Every structure is written in structure tokens, then in C-alpha cells.
Amino acid sequence: MVELTNSDVRLNQTFGTKEEAIRAAGNLLLEQGYVEESYIESMIKRDALTSTFIGNMVAIPHGTDDSKKAIKKSGIVLLQVPEGVSFDGNEAKVIIGIAGIDGQHMDLLSNIAIVCSEEENVQKLVEAKNGKSYY
Image (cartoon, rainbow, N blue to C red; front, side):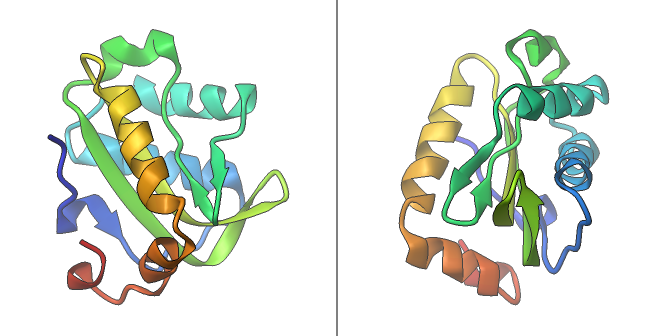
């Protein structure tokens, strides 16, 4: 089970481009010890293949299949972007970076998609003022 902690979250972030947002999520995954630095470039490549924007103001950047060796342990990070950032014309206000080992990748994606399919859940994340507000 992967848990989101206060140190995995950055509130009130601002990004000019989706690449900046993806890199910030990757750097937080790196800072938290979930991935090696090479994973960040893999996240950029993955989004270039197919957008990681999933709807409801949420993007879930993650690495490509060949980046699995750069994952040290499964983890999740969340960046709140109240002003939004464009993912190919779609506004993302919540960026959830993920790294999953041993098949946890798909479970993480699935669980996040279920929670974020409810617009009210996403709105709570967008409006959160502190860690107690979102989990």
C-alpha cells in the first residue's frame, strides 16, 4: 500500500508549461527517494507519447515501461496548481506523479482515476489549504 504524506505534497504551485509541471513532479519523486534522476526524463517522454492528462483537471505523469529500473520504491506525489497549467489545451490543477514497482503502477493509476473521477474530490484537492484537507 502506497500512502500520501505531507512531504509528498506541494500546495500552491505555479508552472508555465506542462513540462515544468512534469519535471517538478519528477523532482519531488526523486527528492522523496522513490526514483532515480533518469526517471524524470522518462516522464517527459511518456507524456509526449500520450498525454498524461486524465480529465477533471488532473494529470498523472509517470515513466515509460523501460524506466522501471529507475524506480527505487513505489511512491506518489501531489502538486496542487490552483491557477492551472495547460496539458495540450486541457487545464490541470492537480498533478499526481507516480512510480510503481512490481505491478503496483497499474494499481496506483486505477485507484487515482477512481478517486479523481468524482469532480468534488478533485475540487477538494484544488482548494486544500493544508495536509489535513485532502487525506
